[in-house]
Length: 264
Image (cartoon, rainbow, N blue to C red):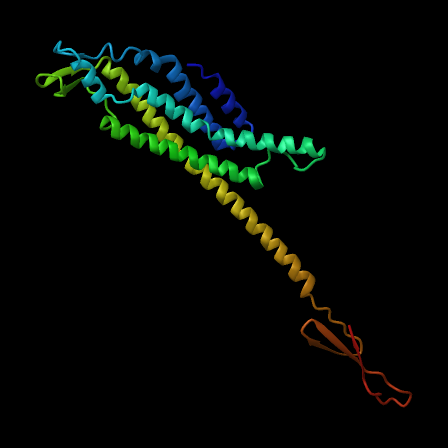
């Protein structure tokens, strides 16, 4: 199986990811994709041929193998890799849409097509939710299909057409167990990173929105509720947003003339 397309997709997403997202990509590349391509495919290469039971009853080994391994572990691992990686394609497609929209209108519509804001931020958060959901779903499916995260050396089968309970032996159980633990650990680590990145982005942009809102309220209040007090040989009266200044004017005989009000 060629993994070039998946590699190209993940490499493209790397440009628009946060620091935590780049760590996730590194783990997917090193501990999942490369391990699968280099080693895991060869370990599970001929698993049905190497599955042996201590009886030569026709069809018994096939039925027992299908019972204990309804889906090949390595193929399920490959499907998990594809499913948790493809949501990142949503981010690449959204950036491509922004770039194409700017070309179509022949003007600058975005500060940067790859900037993490607005609709692109929502797309990125949705991709994180999908990746986390797929990771948890495949771990749960793996546990249900194989009865846990273990590869036993010996399994006992009494399925028809086996005449009685027979012992069946799984090839390379220890090696398969090691790779299975790698799958589980890296999946759990990816889930933790996705949750951390999701929380970080939500918290970061929530704080950013709150600060913007406070700044706007501060500016509005300074423009509409500022009171100017003017004092000039008189008393300033304030009513709401209006102020009235009473001026005292003296005549030639030294007596005060009636006050006059000037509203500002």
